[in-house]
Amino acid sequence: MTEPLATSLPDGWTLRVPALGDLPRLTDLRRADQAPYTGSDQVDVEALAAEVAGQKSWTRRQVVAVHDGAVRAWATAHDRAAGRVLVHVYVDRSTPERSEVAAGLYAWLDQQGCDITDQRGLTESHLDASPFADDAEQRGWLAAAGYRQVRTWLHMTRPVTPADIEGLPGPREGVVVRTVDCHEHGLPVAADLRLVHQQLEESFQDHFNSYRESFAEFVQRLREEPGHRWDHWWLAYVDGEPAGALVASLLPPGASGKEGSYVEYIGVNRRARGRGVAKALLFAVIRDVAARGGDRVSLEVDADSPTNADQLYSSLGWVTDYVTESWHRDVTV
Image (cartoon, rainbow, N blue to C red; front, side, top):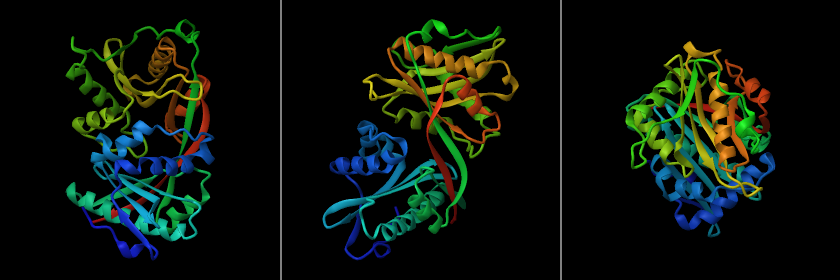
């Protein structure tokens, strides 16, 4: 791993790798980063712990910036897929020299991006940041670091009630939706998992920022999520042929004290579009949440999706909670 650039920070600041003991402070940084733009200061502490010192930390490189003995900033680089590194910088906004600290951390992320690219045997990749659309200061830091804004994302939620169990229409004729098959001991059948991966890879070929991901990487990355559940993986068929897939994860209790589900991926292959497959998959998730006593289904959608997915979600009761953007910077080894 590339050594941190101590000279890239203001005098009196140092970098080190975060430890589990930093979790309360990192929770505060993430809470302060999101609350003004999402309207919620809730942070999934279990998921955050997994990023810092759990399974999710294995594909991440991260440092905290320390001043006067306190953690005041945090930078992460996630080796997401070949050619794509997800990055984020959190800085205590009460810090007078926060712009200089952010610049130093983005320079450190450049190093990590180049090193990850080299280790993957590639010559170039892009760094991918996701600031909140209304966070003018973070967007300014990204622009100063050489990033460009390339996309807008809507984060949407649909309320779920017990009436959804019986109140939603069934699939169209010829469309069948089922969860992946499992063995007696509860682990899923390998062929179904590979079919989910295949359907999603085929479905996203014409989507923005789509990167081919090996089956092993795909499964391992999704299993890292604390909300991962095998019974949240669905397959769809049209006239007996595979047509799409949906992978969801369990959302922790929200303000109401009830759990929900988050749609990590939903894809319909091009041969089956227009047959109501997406609706059938979404209705399966909604019914599942209702049956479990949950209260919501959340997801993220490209505002410029070529399939107009945001319009579909809006027509089915999803509303936008907040908006983020994709900012990219290319790095070359």
